[in-house]
Length: 368
Image 1 (cartoon, one colour):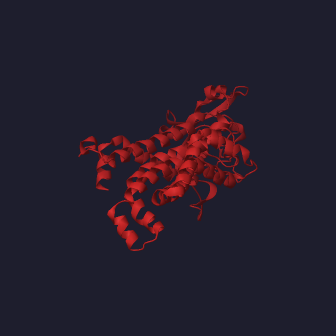
Image 2 (cartoon, helix red, strand yellow):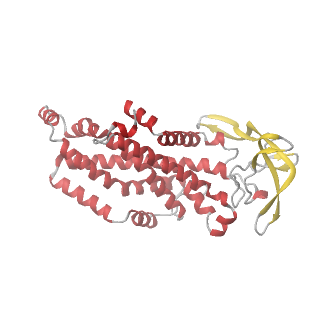
Image 3 (cartoon, one colour):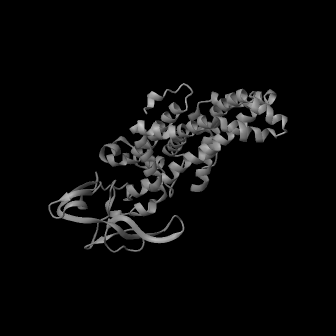
């Protein structure tokens, strides 16, 4: 742990990545609180509405506020700013009711326009006008993209941890036992792993998802995608673990454990696997982005998460359907930005951990 702390202090980029991940996962857990609206709330008068958050106006001075806009071209969905019409954005306002952490009922939100909320989740009234806060703009149905991004993070970020857990468990069980026992079992496991690796991962994922039923709800789709990604991801780690177990089992302390009559499974999981802890940590940090990107690809192609559930991949699929949409409504790229930040952060942290636990690591590379 001292080496890890030293490493993060010596690499500000890795420290910034750790902070970014902490913010993303913290926002994912408290999505209802930091989001001003539900992900399914529709503002029918604000379809394709651009971001309206600003921090200065002659009327209200400095501070977070929104400026009213009116639709002037419905064909191209062009909005014009209304001069002098600003509304203060306040912290800790009342809004749609939710259960905080799934336990406590609350209607407190981090920010919003302090105006009476109309039951039904469709409007905020401010002086007789609907003026929602669109930090990231609105989509093709008038839904707040900021709220949808944070709610979508729950699937996109969770699937990384769940997927790597299943994949690494398979890799440790099959690779570890194959390396320990050897023989025919080792040959069978390695040939099967090589067969899976032989098929390009993306093609295999698309094939498995397309041949399975599409009539699934959000929970079933989530579990199905996780299982598919885990099945595709375990062979590489299994081969690495098998090679390390094959070398470690020749050590004297393993021979002593065998003479004491300790069961092979106990030897593998309690004495051999802990010797590879550093390698497993690196595999986790570098593997999670792969699962997140895999879910994104499936959802972008329409084979993943479907309405009413939302993920970053499904947001990209629904909003960036044409180049014209991307050119006219550039705020639709925000889910892609979150995806890019998450992937880079995990990879930078994985690079640091790889260098720290490299047997040829030199202390001067990280700094004192």
